[in-house]
Image (tube, rainbow, N blue to C red):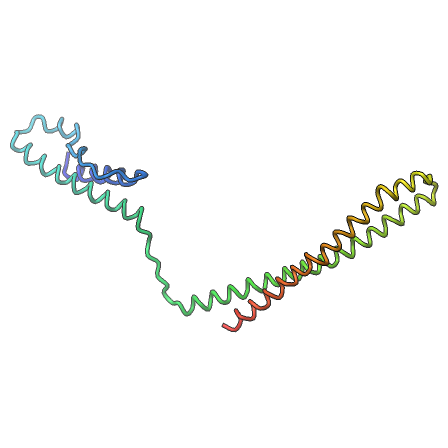
Length: 193
């Protein structure tokens, strides 16, 4: 087994210890040379063995330290980010902000138009509903069924639609209008930059 093999083994052990969550403290107890090394060295002379073993242990320790340090640095030190040309970046951000605000303004105005039309559509559909019930009465619906339908279906539906329309007029549409004005103000500021 070569010195490079021991460095690589140490490097891997160091990386594994540092990559654990939480990182394990440095531990050089695994630094003994592997069994593969012992088997290959069995036949060599003891003095040569001792010299090579010390060199390989030093190589393992160096590899362990390198692997551990690089793994810790990658785990806990975020990469540095530099802005190369802040003037172009600021112009780009401003243009992006303006475009985003313009899109938001169009969407809010579209929502306001929809809410206005929705309230009018509900009124129209309620009138249509009332006229159909009247037509049923004219076409032969019994007076008891007609009065029951008026009392238990048309009145509650009229009240609910009136409540929804009132909510739209007092809450939803003013809220959207307020957001439209705020967006116009923000857009004006963004364009002036």
